[in-house]
Image 1 (cartoon, rainbow, N blue to C red):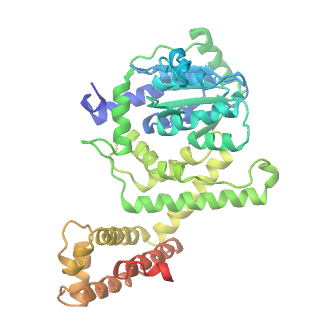
Image 2 (image 1 turned 180 degrees about the vertical axis):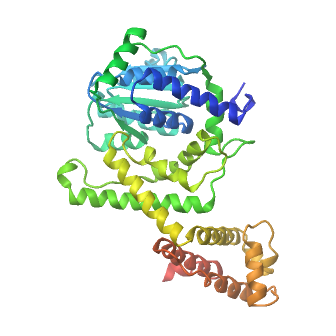
Image 3 (image 1 turned 60 degrees about the vertical axis):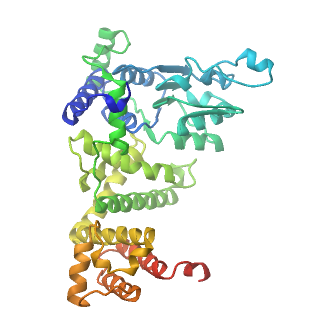
Length: 435
């Protein structure tokens, strides 16, 4: 049985995840945001890193979350400098070694586990950490002649400290969700922690219901757009809006680092990798799904701080929310969302023409299956009269329609400058190579 054959009901599945999240919050006191973040990682098949001082229940949190699921293998290890890759990938096959081949016996290793917990991950040496990169990102074991797929769904790693090097920077980019535990010392929180400890002796508690791993996998297919039956729609204008907010946040973070270098002694600049950028669309689907919706709305963008900030550092969280608010107000006050939708529909039409240049030989307004065809057709009839089937006429029509866009914000103006180049390239392919 695979994940596509498991019964799937959107409302029932959302409620199962809400029940699981509530139970983990009951067992792990005052870590609501981190718990939300890690469940997001699970729904996206991503990895999460937790940093805190010792004794802050990092391993308990990971074990409690993984216990909410059934039908999945869990690999757990505490890293150390003496460990070699065989700690994670299985011991060497002696018979193969006699033949001069280094082959790991992957049974019961991380490679054959859906979930993983690596405690004190930065205690591992760089050679071992480097060997983990492909397994975490490409879900494969690639060491020498051995190349096998890995079943890894999500790994939670914990650390008391960050170790900065070329290898650890690459590793951190695999853990796109990051959190910092700040110990809570108020009497109410301490009472609750003590009460749960007495009840469960410091161990994970039995959940009222466990989620089948195949259901998690099926749900993550929906989140990532792989499911054949269910999909969560992201409007084009929301994609543009989200990218604008994230870019603005990146600029503001770098400005903060430049203005206050003493607060960030180990950080030269703030960089969002293309890998993390691309995960924003999956995160938006997670947010919509957990709200019981199958369409993303602009307000969901605010919660992208779970992805782009270190949860627990409230200064980063507030900066992201401020960036969201600034861009949202800017676009709303200028009534730019509608313009963005039209411009992006026009961009999709241009991409369609690039992929099918033979369509330029016929009247563009007769091309079916494009969301902005009717708008373009109405504009063309009002402005140019009846369309003919010449490439030159189509060029004049597209360029004329493009000129109707008066950018309402600087972000839109930047986009239009590149879109104008795309129109030139459509009718004069390769011209940009010589200019």
